[in-house]
Image (cartoon, rainbow, N blue to C red; front, side, top):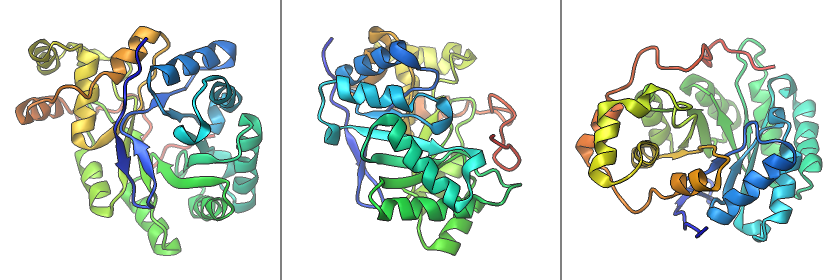
Length: 281
């Protein structure tokens, strides 16, 4: 399997990130390690994990087995909802490193704001301290709304480098993406294909795939890139991993991007996980 070279994007803290990553949710144990190693050999350099995925050990093992130098990889994890208190957050980051057998994480995010607990500022202060100690290189968020992010900036003076949000053709998040861009925050996309939902059969997607000689999945991932977002698809087969990477040799027209964005729905979320009220435990 040939390796695809993925472009990099500069972040507001001086670090950089690959323009496409590899999701590891539900990739556990030896099979998960094999899938991650396969992905790295295909050309993925960003692996996205979380404390709650219970696969940080598998991620670390994949890093050791893949044959690629550690400094060429970008490994992400996330702090869970029950660990937002300052001291708990710090030792959770340490535990993440122990689990993975890594000296540092490239990115560490707060997984959800859990606003009813009102502890996410403490968690953010812990991430700032973890970065100061060299435990993590860059810090960011996942599933935060603009009002949550603005509060963090106002109270700590530190903006996140990235915010990872649900983003796919049925839920393009235009207002949130625009707010991120104004603040210099990179948007990452989880569930970028909508987890094989009906968007793959939508006429604008199918027609763009026909026009460019690409698959519908490649068209949707390319749509993310042209929106300025970093998609993080998951795939277990080497063929699909390579297919998902092979999106940097074509470009959608403005009309095609707009037609796919136009598939957005008011009820586009896959589940009832609105960050204003959803609680992750």
